[in-house]
Image 1 (cartoon, helix red, strand yellow):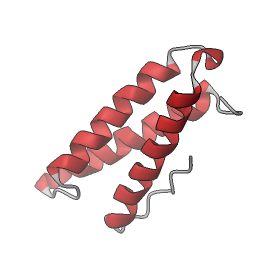
Image 2 (tube, helix red, strand yellow):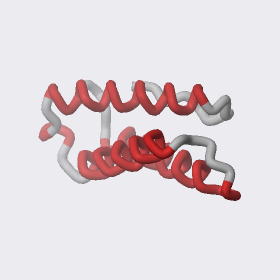
Image 3 (cartoon, one colour):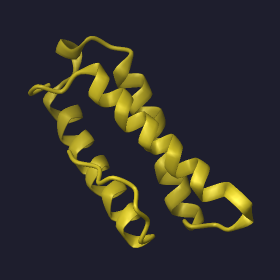
Image 4 (cartoon, helix red, strand yellow):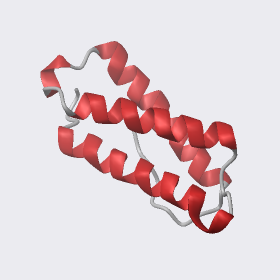
Length: 88
């Protein structure tokens, strides 16, 4: 997976969960419904990948991960929050 480890995936899962938690706090939705749905979907995908061995992740899955991390980064930027940047 080009140097990515399960620990990297687990860190991204934590960020996703932080985004989801923030999105629902205080009835103050920081994300729209489609963004929350995307974050939840990406989080689930990352959790599934983190349970597999690094060598079992295909090139197409690696490409999917980069696209997902890019999308998460855009969601975070759009909220003007001070959450650390999500890097592919």
